[in-house]
Amino acid sequence: MSIDSSLPICIAGQWRLGRGERYASRYPATGEVVAWLNAADLQDVEDAIQGAHQAFLHSGWAQRKPHERAAVLYRIAELIRQHGEDLAQLQRQDNGKPINETRALVASAAGTFQFFAAACETLEETITPSRGDFVSMSLYEPMGVIAAITPWNSPITSEAQKVAPALAAGNAVVLKPAEITPLLALQLAHICDAAGLPKGLLSVLPGKGSLLGDALTRHPLVKRVSFTGGTRTGKHIAHIAADKMMPVSLELGGKSPTIVLDDADLEHAVAGVLYGVFSSSGESCIAGSRLFVAQHLYDPFMQRLVDAASQLRVGDPADERTQMGPLISAEHRQSVERYVAMGLAAGGCLRLGGERLGGPAYERGFYYPPTILEGLSNRQQVCQEEIFGPVLVALPFTDEAQLLEQANDSLYALAAGIWSRDYKRAWDLGRKLQAGTVWINTYKQFSISTPFGGWRDSGLGREKGRLGILQYMEQKSLYWGMNQQPLAWAGLSREVAP
Ligand code: NDP
Image (tube, rainbow, N blue to C red):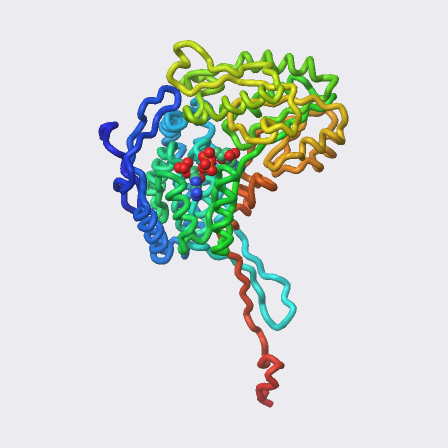
């Protein structure tokens, strides 16, 4: 197929063009077109949901034994691995992340399918202690059609974290990837087809969230929405869900504090803080973007941090040595720039970065350098709002009680980091920090077996973990009467033969 032809999209078991507007997916490093697509429109949403509903009712997927569903998910994991390099290269083009990062994301997606296959075939239902002449059980049923809505920053990983458990649980899924990063979701649908997933169980609808995501959320046949994205969109979805009495899971934004205590190992802390905020060019919900450093370490620590950050290799995502690629789009880079200007206007000063990179290597992409601001207070807008770019704000602290107050003083509560050699101190602080995830002497490390999610404006619900599959199931209690006599209340008693 020529690059000028539109890619077909996957709707209710058919690969065909969307009925919406034609648009291009572009490589953020050069602006070049990677692929053309026709977005889905509202009729496509309806077709996908009806197709998913029919597949849920009639494909037999929900009735398959758990180990049979698991077998398909294991095949999906295997196929993702087999096509790993192609997927990683495509993802690099779709969203501009460095190739080493996209390889890790693809491997993580394969691991997610494998993990939820295992969770599916080992899920136990229980016989609960009986308090009468009955046997009581607690069981789980699939819900029906699940809508999965994902952002642009980690395609295939975000998608796998929703699609794998939802399918494992026996549901059908309609997936809406971010408009600007649709390609990996479409490849995932091809892989699911090749692995033998029944037709119609997974549809992929590229296009605008305000149109398609909204319609999916409102649709009466959609029984749950699993959303990852911005807090404003998440709240909008939560309102619609409340009217439908529909459960939702919301993985939203963050402004995570990283704390360097006065007994920290400086080398480890510098490496961890750098990775925590600047990897993925800061386009990460868990970026450790608010740095608190013990006052008496502040100057030497900041000097080492600034020196190390200035050595980070920003550039071509295809180069294996690159640590930071471009930002996702010109608009997003402008938004990052506005935040830096706001920080400066509020009295902050730049320790590093803050200006676009010059030179031919950076002309066409949406590059922005590692940037460090200081001299601000935690209450200022730049320290409170998610910038979603390579911008760190650094604040010294003297008193640990005040530090805790400031670290927790945020609408967000997604993640936090602590650097200290004293494990008792770190334990104490770690328990008091309000966050879905706290890393101690490490940062941004993940395991699919560990639940993930946020408090407050960072979200509702948890993804991952062996029990992550349960959010896509309804719990049901089943009672089996074992009475020798009719229930006593009616006053009827059966004649017992002599
Ligand atoms: P958005 O909330 O703008 O978009 C996320 C998804 O929602 C996209 O697919 C988008 O579609 C869709 N969407 C937009 N409007 C609606 C609507 N009215 N109804 C339903 N769906 C809609 O976030 P970004 O794409 O800007 O992603 C960045 C955000 O995601 C950051 O805040 C980040 O912190 C958060 N995030 C959270 C993570 C977590 O696990 N907690 C992980 C990764 C990111 P489209 O883009 O096509 O318009």
